[in-house]
Length: 143
Image (cartoon, rainbow, N blue to C red):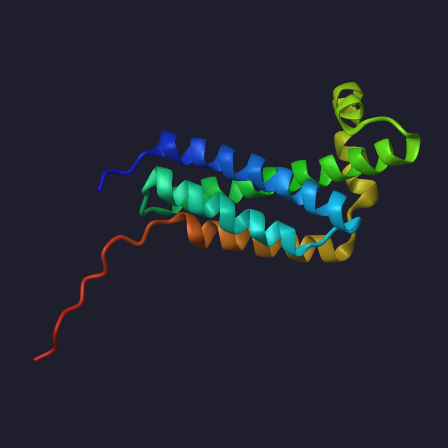
């Protein structure tokens, strides 16, 4: 089995974006943000990194963890934009297109709560562990 770092990066991008969109969708439907969605992004991103990257070293875990962090931040940002668009009566797509990227970090800093850090850490850990392909386990008989 040949590892594929480029495949791992593509998998990380796919997992992070799909996870962020799902996070936002769940928030829109249920009108409440759930920290467990961050862990789901970790699983999803880890799955794509492992499947497309086929890596057995820690660099693949780092790739999964990094893209999970980015996916969680994008999900958080999309949620903020949705709430603001809902409050102002503007469509989500219009609010997304008009959003000033310079406000990203200040807005996330203002809205993040203590439990968000816990779920973010759990998501990053999950992605790290799940991104590394274990390969075939060899079992030896003891004599």
